[in-house]
Image 1 (cartoon, rainbow, N blue to C red):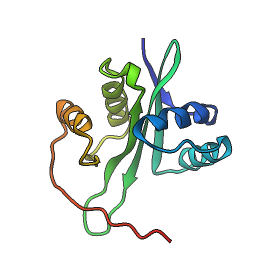
Image 2 (image 1 turned 90 degrees about the horizontal axis):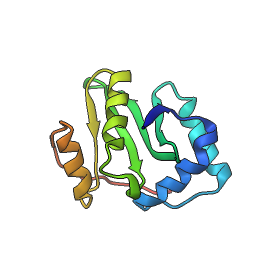
Image 3 (image 1 turned 60 degrees about the vertical axis):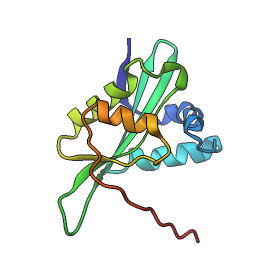
Image 4 (image 1 turned 120 degrees about the vertical axis):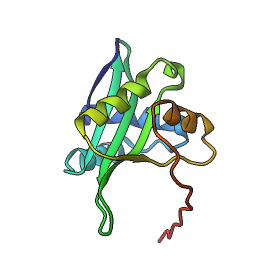
Length: 139
C-alpha cells in the first residue's frame, strides 16, 4: 500500500538518494537538508513523498508560478519514482494528490529526451501545449 504525505526534513537523505535516478548529482546531507528546508518553509512550494512498507519510493515538488501578464498556475518542479517501483501507480498517485491539494491550472516541463515522462503525463491527462527553449546564464 502506498502513502502520500508532505515531506519532512527527516526525508532529505532519501530524497537526495532518489534524485540520482534522474541524473542529478547527490549532494551532501547538509545541502540536501538546506534545499528541502527552504522549500518546506516556502508559501509557494510543496514537496510530497510516496512511501510503502520499505520506505520512500518517490518524491514530488510543485510550486505556484505567479505571472505578471497572465494567470498564475501550479507547476511540477520535479518528480522521481525509484526505477524499481515504476509502473506501479506511485507517480500517478503523487500527481493526483498534489492536484487535489492545489486546485487550479497545472503545467509540467520535461526534458525533450525523456520520452517515458512525456508518455506518463499524457496518460494522466496532461497535453503538450508548447515547445520552448531554456536559456541559462551561469554566473
